Image 1 (cartoon, rainbow, N blue to C red):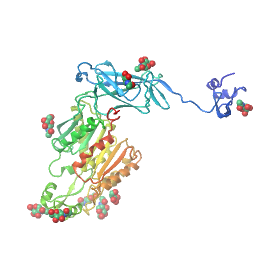
Image 2: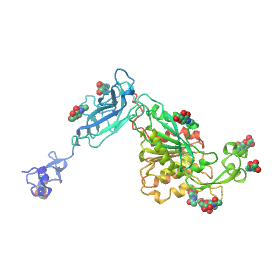
Image 3: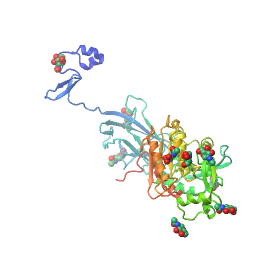
Image 4: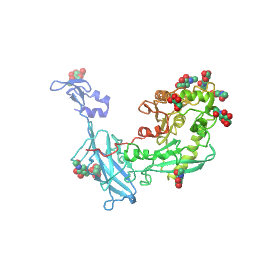
Length: 489
Ligand SMILES: *[C@@H]1O[C@H](CO)[C@@H](O)[C@H](O)[C@H]1NC(C)=O
Ligand SMILES: *[C@@H]1O[C@H](CO)[C@@H](O)[C@H](O)[C@H]1NC(C)=O
Ligand SMILES: *[C@@H]1O[C@H](CO)[C@@H](O)[C@H](O)[C@H]1NC(C)=O
Ligand SMILES: *[C@@H]1O[C@H](CO)[C@@H](O)[C@H](O)[C@H]1NC(C)=O
Ligand SMILES: *[C@@H]1O[C@H](CO)[C@@H](O)[C@H](O)[C@H]1NC(C)=O
Ligand SMILES: *[C@@H]1O[C@H](CO)[C@@H](O)[C@H](O)[C@H]1NC(C)=O
Ligand SMILES: *[C@@H]1O[C@H](CO)[C@@H](O)[C@H](O)[C@H]1NC(C)=O
Ligand SMILES: *[C@@H]1O[C@H](CO)[C@@H](O)[C@H](O)[C@H]1NC(C)=O
Ligand SMILES: *[C@@H]1O[C@H](CO)[C@@H](O)[C@H](O)[C@H]1NC(C)=O
């Protein structure tokens, strides 16, 4: 008698022909087991259930790179690893093996079954179901800064069939909790003149020189002004709370006096009402009352205090300047440690900067993978006939343009606004929600997967508001892989 499995291996058709009369059951048909239960015939047996096949001899490798020269511990300069499973725990570390200069490694042999993943040869065998979270420590004492590293399980190709095992390389840092601000000046053929650029380098930048970083273009940041207040906010996210991945900020806020900010942060030409005399800071030479409402402002600007200004909409020139000149220079200053691929490139801004973020992300999806449009001036421009209504050019034209809806690269876009930004004709609160809803219906986008919208009740329109909610867009766009620290037991 030929066993069915062998017959099937020879050829399924042949196996049908050689089915022998003395078999327990007929292959793949229903049958009755010896103890009278209904079953199915498989491989010559009448089965009522099939056992899941566990996997063993799975292997992955974690490699940590860190400049040894920066290790301050005198006696023990080795790296250790603690974690939530595969033989690791959070109380005592395992020593990693130093394999070459600045390089430490550890292998994990594990099993997996329908209930999770376990260390293969450990006595203490915690099971994990999704993520191996771990931290690196110097001398099992000095804990790394920032969120846990993570291996998302399951991973491909860990079985003994493969010679090369999956390798996860990480760049921990241990001492520095503060980033630093820098700046440079660069000539711009696109928008003219020498322009000053703001840079923020994250805490680990000088400590672990192997590490590379995503980049965020942020509008309205200028070296030496209120933008200095941003660094401590970002430091906290990256080092203290550890909820966000480290990134480099390239800030642009070098506007010429007058209304250059309007020229550079608007994507299309349009009309705007500016002060007939004075500036917004002196209430148009005290023409506006100090406590004006949006309605009053609208009326007074049209009737008395304002004048029509035609703004050319040089947003694209600013973006070209950023991509062609500013970022390459920043890359040079950062020793090529900026990740400039699409998933690692973000754009962020508030007000007109928020409009520009959305515009940049929407029209250049192959370049920007991440965008934060905060209290965006989606109303731009005001209607040049009525002067007291708005055109909402981004929503009506850019967002609805079919050519931009097709062949898009994957992106994450977050929009936000305060509830007190709702006054007509700008309707900033409402238009922000509307834009998010439109985006979420475009193929490739789903609310809460890659587009988010937040409204802050009670919040009005000002830069303090912007900085005070910077953390939430960072956590949305660049969340840490793992939990921020060792879990408290
Ligand atoms: C298998 O099928 C044949 C043909 O229908 C039938 O004669 C035979 O009794 C079946 N065998 C079993 C074990 O059910
Ligand atoms: C934690 O892991 C270390 C290193 O593998 C081991 O020596 C220690 O016994 C473990 N502790 C517990 C409580 O499992
Ligand atoms: C993992 O398995 C490989 C091959 O079976 C073996 O050489 C190695 O020592 C094991 N590593 C650990 C950490 O158990
Ligand atoms: C710009 O950077 C230089 C050092 O490169 C520094 O001396 C200067 O204070 C910075 N300017 C501002 C405005 O921060
Ligand atoms: C604005 O201030 C003026 C004078 O201080 C006052 O008379 C007026 O009622 C105020 N208006 C509003 C809307 O608060
Ligand atoms: C602006 O200034 C000019 C010259 O001083 C003056 O004639 C005009 O009335 C002012 N306009 C407004 C709206 O204050
Ligand atoms: C108003 O805007 C339209 C385009 O929207 C333009 O064709 C027209 O010239 C503008 N008119 C004025 C007075 O600026
Ligand atoms: C501007 O307002 C006029 C009058 O209400 C309207 O006809 C026109 O369509 C508006 N322009 C735009 C671009 O919405
Ligand atoms: C432009 O968009 C605004 C906001 O969605 C809307 O109210 C308005 O009707 C639109 N205008 C045109 C001409 O489609």
